[in-house]
Length: 72
Image 1 (cartoon, rainbow, N blue to C red):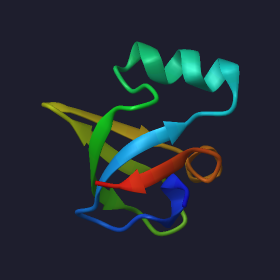
Image 2: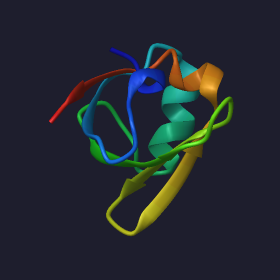
Image 3: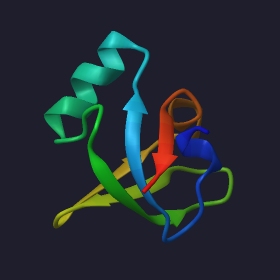
Image 4: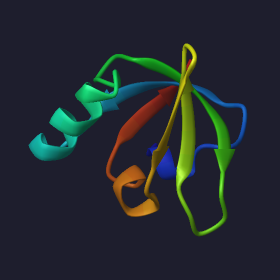
């Protein structure tokens, strides 16, 4: 399952971020493999909005479809 497949309110764990550049960028925002986050909004044909602690992060749809996740 990818980040592009989740729904609003889903609690997920990031399993794999395949692209090294993307992984480094996500790490700067506190998102890494193994991190638990919540999907607070999935904008149709737009970004996926994630929340970790008090921080919100928008991830573009094409990028979200490359990140492997699992439900928590």
